[in-house]
Length: 94
Image (cartoon, rainbow, N blue to C red):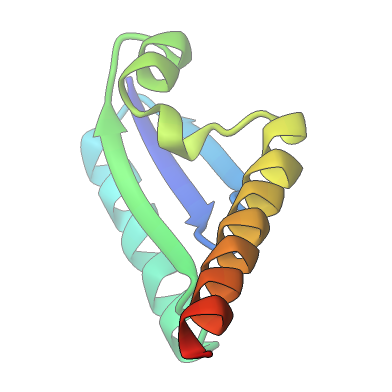
């Protein structure tokens, strides 16, 4: 099986389309890439993977399949790290 992945690097949302034919998957991927390029959607990543099943793909390329609840946790963690860095900067500035 071939899987066309459309991944939004900003929101971490992923769309996955399954194909039996590699050429069809590649052609569809190229069409998607061109569409995102012309729409200036640079946050979008388009890839084609071969895997025995979607479960195998999720295991080997888990970054594309972030669970719903984890999206907010990751953003919160980055915000906390940024605030700690800002606090350290301000303390050292004195």
